[in-house]
Image (cartoon, rainbow, N blue to C red):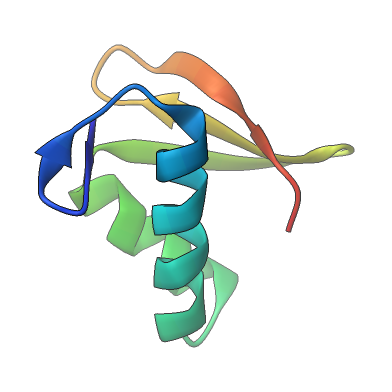
Amino acid sequence: MFAENKLTENMAEIEAFLLRERGKALSDAEWRFRMKGYGYNLRRTDIGVEVSRLPQNRVLGTISV
């Protein structure tokens, strides 16, 4: 998916992008909504936030927030 205007599958780059965007959002709901616009679906789990690629909803990994 896209992170910093380039296509990437590198989870470290995706995590860095998601956390930077989280800093810009006022709430978790806004953050999840913004990330759907970039093609990511975020779902909170017991171990962190599961990151999936849309529209296939293929899980890329989990980040801790």
